[in-house]
Image 1: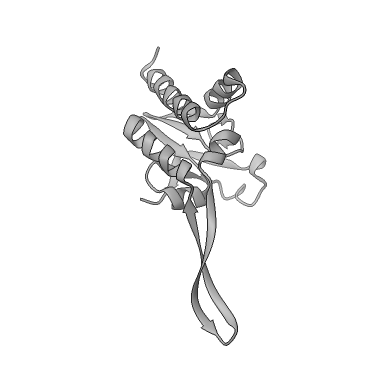
Image 2 (image 1 turned 45 degrees about the vertical axis):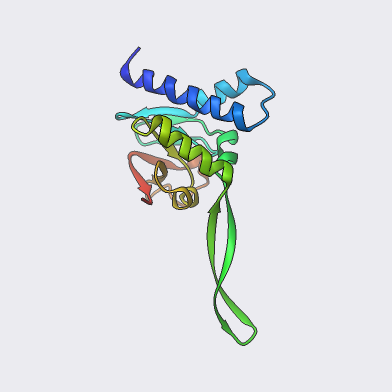
Length: 160
């Protein structure tokens, strides 16, 4: 087993243990496959696709999405009033992490810090910070639907 595969196996076991502790799981085998299919080794890191969308890379590789992990790494919106002009409110929308998502990221930092990066939406990357990255699309596919986009494997948005 290659070095990357050892880390991948460890990351997968940490994720499955977290899910078993925090969520109801009907089909453990299906969940195990879902998590396995959402993982890809890039360079020296295991990337875990925590979006519901399949991701296509410029090098031709594809990693499936995970609906389960997308639910965990979700954020809610909150509007903060910045100013008022008469009866008009000017607001700033902020994104707040879920408790489950916060705990998941904390667990991944604690257990797998030097092995993993979590792929999320740009909102998730901004909301959760360290360990969560979002893909950067090629210019020619950036405005296409998610299933048609192509992203760089070695260029990521991060907010830490």
